[in-house]
Image 1 (cartoon, rainbow, N blue to C red):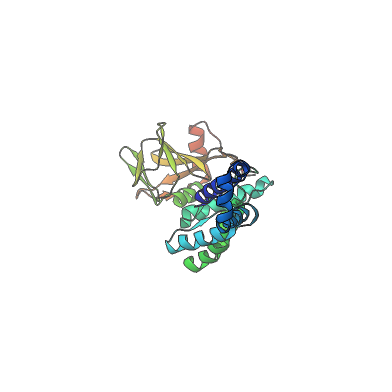
Image 2: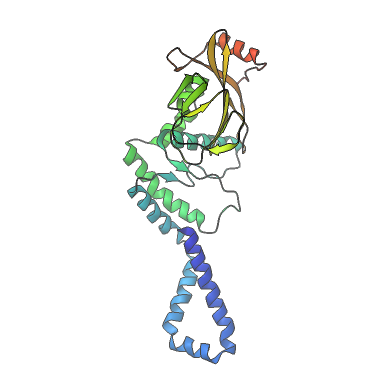
Length: 279
């Protein structure tokens, strides 16, 4: 919608400027401007509105209203405002990640100083003004504050795997993970090409990388001492800090379960890895 309005406004402005430049040299155009003075004034008013009024705010508000009516929930500038403080940036990305995975509420990435057109900020503010009021009504609680608190807590490998996947199962050929349908997620299976997340369960033999809008992580299947384990490692990507490998176990029922510190250390040592201590 915004792109169409921008295109229309720019074309209207160019048409007005071109008409004013040609008018002194065209008697017919001057006569047309005099006869259709009302239309000319309307064009001038529309051009002034396009360049000098915050029309993005009501357009964003109406767009959010239409999205909510269709059952689509999305956020723009909140909680993803550009910030010079790296820690606050990471906190907001973590909140956006929680919103997307847990509730299916998408978010935009962070635009830099020159990342948007003049009315984009106004559009984002108008859109989020309505959407922030609609979210607690639809979900029955303040999900942004809930995600803020959840994102501030550390998770074990088992908790992360249960967060991202509906299930993690051991199959004869390796692992099968059931990933909830989310837009803009990619996967690299066993070192192959990066492809969009396919519909349904994802199967791989030893290793898979998952790339989302706000995270990049790798999971690997490892067998040690007669048991099967999953090694999880977050990789650096687009300013996101990496985290050292952590380990979860697979139970006989195929569920992801916690491991003891001794088991985790032994599995990582067998791979020549060490766990990074949290900051």
